[in-house]
Image (tube, rainbow, N blue to C red; front, side, top):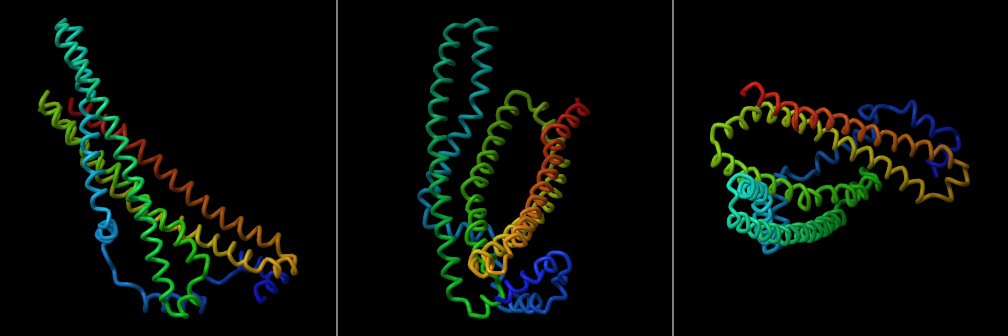
Length: 301
């Protein structure tokens, strides 16, 4: 009722334009003090994630085995293409051409089968992990003190249950999958390159220091932007939660337009965070994916 009355008297505009800084708001200070006093101990994220995935260790083992086989096949196919072309164009050996052709078809078949196993298994693991994470978070919320729900808004809580849990689940389902696949492909590729010409293989390490340094800076900024993006989304969810839960009061004071503007400003802040992330990714990808490596190769050669 107090919120609707404030909206009817122009409080929404005041909240949008001239509200206090959070550091000067007694409610925000009390919230921060309570959360710091009752906050959980610091834990390592990777260790905590693997502890929650531990019940699915058999699926993880199958997914990792499929990933290794699929990555080895993906790396071997270009090498087999080269041998196939050499056999027919340079050696003109029909027997070797047929041998490499059969080997290439067999490798492609095995790679396709285990690529499907890898992707589907990681999807199942990510879904089970996401369910387990949401259940643990919800159970933890139910055990909190009543002061916790006074200090934390409902929109923040629901945003953590939906968006944040999904984001953590994506780390298991997608990012771990891609990271391990890339590592195995790099190892196999380096093995082929060293076997063909170890001198040319050494040129690949010239650009590594620059890429590592750029990735470190990019990772720090991306972590900050990701936090800001999730906070902006949680703020918008809080506004929507408050308005929808008291929609009759909002309409009684004809505050629909002002609430739309407040929610729109929250979505604009979220969009600005996404645009900043896209700009940062543009700079990083354009520099590290092509420009820096090829410049380093040209300097060495």
